[in-house]
Image (cartoon, rainbow, N blue to C red; front, side):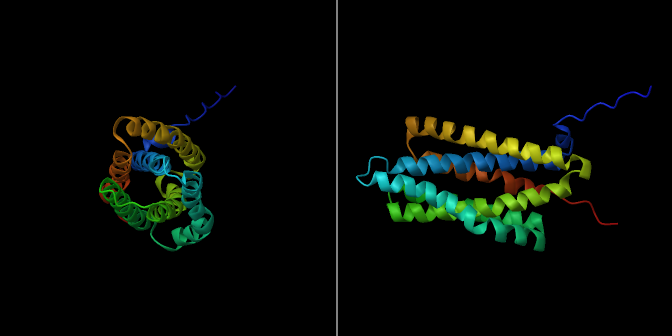
Length: 202
């Protein structure tokens, strides 16, 4: 009787170094984004209008996903995904740095905070479809399903880790360092994208 083939490990796509490092960059970026949302909600928790501001922060962070997910998917199919993902990350870094600096300087009124949260959410909405499309270039066809599952793992990990890390930082040092950490974590993915060199075409 022929031997039964061993089932592929769910971590098989990590054998491909580019996928592993880009996946790790996505995790870092997502952790920073989720932490930033918690920081933004906490920034005005003691404000007299907190019952209005805090829910609006959540709305501003999720609304871009509904508005931009479909256009982002179309753009990901029309342009070079690596360069598009890099451009999105540079934009996200600029937003994160400005948010951190202005908050630390005490120049962050509620309306401006909501604008920044929406801008950060727009970057996240553009990032997700582009990254998911790029996965097909990074692993063989028979590993795409496993790679997609690992992407879902990264979403769950970042949703859990981001708020937890943000809560610890806020308790120890306040909100501005959370925004600064987001800016720092967001640099990981573009750094990997800059170093990535596609194989030369035959």
